[in-house]
Image (tube, rainbow, N blue to C red; front, side, top):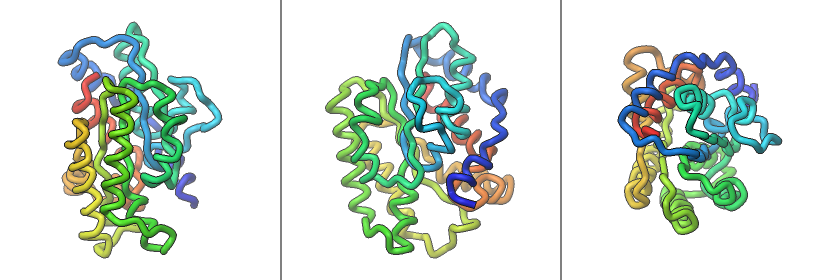
Length: 242
């Protein structure tokens, strides 16, 4: 099965009733900002089989079958009066350089109020087959420049950085470490320097793997299952508090 096919299958049975209470709890602690535009960006974990030809916000098929859909569904259900707009522009296989190449059209031109980014697993994974030679330092400098560019163009934007994560199962072996950890650490530094909200997803999944086997959360170690996407979405809702 292709990576794109795997993601679509893993998220295909999205349970939209999972998250509204988390959204309501977060909203009770936040000011009711009106008309916010929220953009999700990243690689296949964010893309999750979205219909890329659809440009309008708040379309289930345009949001994919993963955590962006769960987050958007929860907040739209909780706040029908706030005019919230949700876009997903994740692209399967992307690394930081690919995000940078399409950032104007797929991020800045949308004038988002919130930009949530999850990128980094391919910045390491693709080095294993020789298709990419980027280092952890390249990842950090490119990511930092991308967020600086965003802040410059959109001074009031709220940035959210989701830590790249993997679980030790499927495609992920001990050989990934400690090199993969360098990308995680870089993402944390980039988020801190940019004043972004940082979600420590890797540690979250390591804790979850003590409750159920790693494959329950990400069958191939990289792409979350439905349970894994729900975990990301709930963590995002608690941390971002729109």
